[in-house]
Image 1: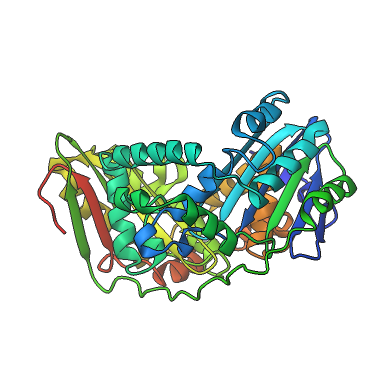
Image 2: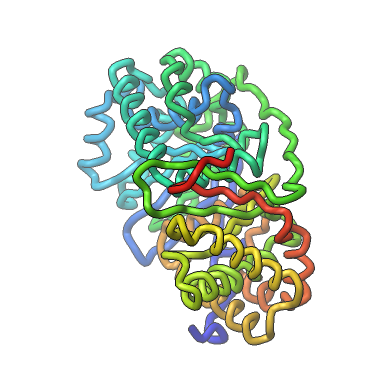
Length: 431
């Protein structure tokens, strides 16, 4: 894409994004996109799995999963008829730090979408019959997870990258912890941690900001929860001090899935963009960067090979993933370590940097073409306090990053001799 023809000032920014805060702490952001007659909504609360009790892991996830199973005013059937009759959708999910809600509808049905969102967040019914059905669904999902080599490797990796920390535990829990959870536990978790304080709501589509604020005021402004508990202060454990090798055997599997890596930068760190740009070169660009070229294309050792950077407000991870046969697993590990060693030994080339910069800058406008893409981008700016002009500055910021910036930032995290190496599939356990 020819990025020099893009008018970056036309991207969402402080001139076009309307921001308001309700008295109870809810932040509302809206952006008018008159190109389509629909709206997309996304929001979050600070009620993630980091609040789960150790003996009831999966409680936050269970609670969020029940929010669309009916409210005090709308039973399950009525709730979904309200949405389906309008061609609308509304869903809830849970991550390590937040509960998320997402919905879409025609612009004329935004009020119904916000009404049902407010009821779900404020007055979920947690009816016993749907509770037991949801438990069965969650347990079925966990049974499938236990036979998925990629999922098992990911669990192992997280466990040892973040020992004794919620980031090292599965958001959806374990079968034994899900079995311990009761309806009363969901009700208590909701009372303790569902609160308007610091909630964020973003609406994008063919609606004006006055309408969005008025509707949010109508359905959310009187929400108070004086019994809500504060977020606990959690200490992020130190990154690995050497090589940590873990493997879990799964019966009747011919493929092994591998995840190896270490801690990455926080989203607000000055290292984030240089690391993100460098990772594009290392394990994303083209057919998955240098890693893919070495492990998959030249050596033919893996079905897939790539790397990724995931960042939160307080930490992050830098992960290298591959799928290979059991007999090629060790060779794959060695090749990835060798690519990491090369990467932190010398700066990327000017050609690699230019290609990666053009790739990241060029795909940004495409990611902002839909209401969903716009809403998620606006939420990211708000969530990480990046400034509402972040995407207007993005191209200039990316273009200013040098090979030395990437090398220096990457060296703060990557060391081929200090990695968590987790895998699952054929071969004896290493636990």
